[in-house]
Length: 602
Image (cartoon, rainbow, N blue to C red; front, side, top):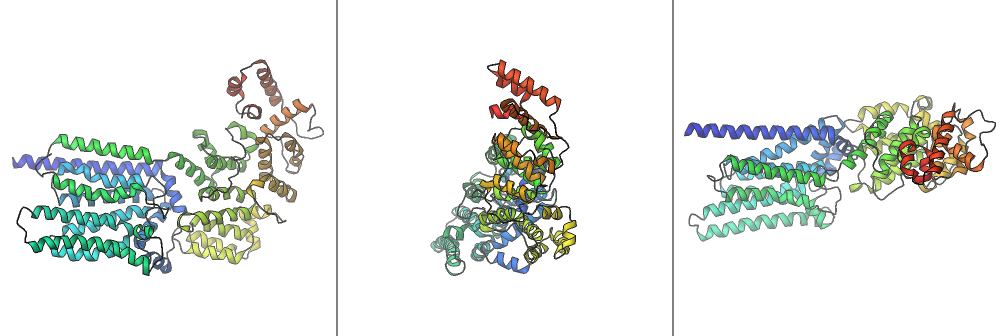
């Protein structure tokens, strides 16, 4: 009998261990290969400084220590695979600590699937970019405090420890103190229920009530006192702290569920008799429930559209233009943000004029990103203006992004771009200020030190492959910038610098997308200054259509000519268009990537 019990325990132990390992592998693979750009984006939208002032600034806030730890780990997302590994280890740690707390209540190891609930919910939470990593480190820390509390066997020791833990945990961890408080109260309730089997003196019953009330009063009063006398902030923020959700005045329901679930599990473990439900059927049923909850939560929270947008953003930020184009061939942009980065990649590789209409376009909104009251659009939109040579517009978009960024935080990406724009503009003192900030980071220190050699060195900047090119594109005349007036701005740029080929192709793209053929035709002579060896395909298609409508060739006297293949395809298109009343589907099949099809059907 004893031998069978030992074998049974060993089998359960191995089953749990395999479950933990498999779960860890799934989490690591998912965040490494399917959701990795969420991690890159999180790293880019914070600025973590390795200075004593930054540390003191953080820990001076309720929950600031937890915020500091979360930010420190988030900066490591800069390294491939490290972010996924950190998340995996944190989530497994949550499961392991939960398991140890629950086993102190009930040693039934067949219930182990329940220990995965807090871990799964924390992982689901990270699918939303609005939850920082400090939300996970806070939950883990609260569970560690709870485990310490439940390990104390003497009631007096627990009571004294609880009076210390509550204010300390609030100052270190912030709002997750209420998850800890629930763990402590439920644990004390359980010990009271166990003690009811014996007759308790009235004084000890009163002590229990005092026990509960003391914790509750302390948990409520400490945040209020801090809010009233030390840090002036809204009451809701004082209780929750700012390190669990990136919209400070909002407390999402998922966060509240995660705070409550450990205490519910503790009570559930208590009400299930330790000698019941020790069979394979219980284990299988609980596994199915946990998997169902995990799958449902995953489907509700996962956002592959955002991951796709962040992929385009990551590749554009790192100027990996060919990878953007190859990625678009597998997964075409689903929104204006991604489409704008894709069109920028076409322009930077000299393919915008040839391939603009091979992909679904949705007007000029797919070329430029207007400023919206959120931080992602201007942060991505600045890339377009930067490469067009509109350095001040790029700088303006970065500032606007920081203004509306959650918690008004600076981001390492913004600071890096501000250093570059000021360097290009010759504002060396301002650029130096931003470079000094980056010198205090872990992963941008080397870049900042290397870039400082360009300060006050005109020759070196002019020789730089990126900064030197942008200096050549700088506009010499001042003008008022507004994204809605981008057509006129591009025209001014070309008047100032007729060799800005990128600006020319964007201007021509605007005219084509707006179906403004006359303005398009009027700009054709600029191609001579830009040394085009041949006319881009979409331009040829537009010119051919113009000729068919006006019966006049705008290329008369030009060395640039329409190819015979385009003329032939125009004739084939016209035959189908004029002879078939329902020509749209047929034309889409053979001519869907032409300007003619866009002109007629988009």
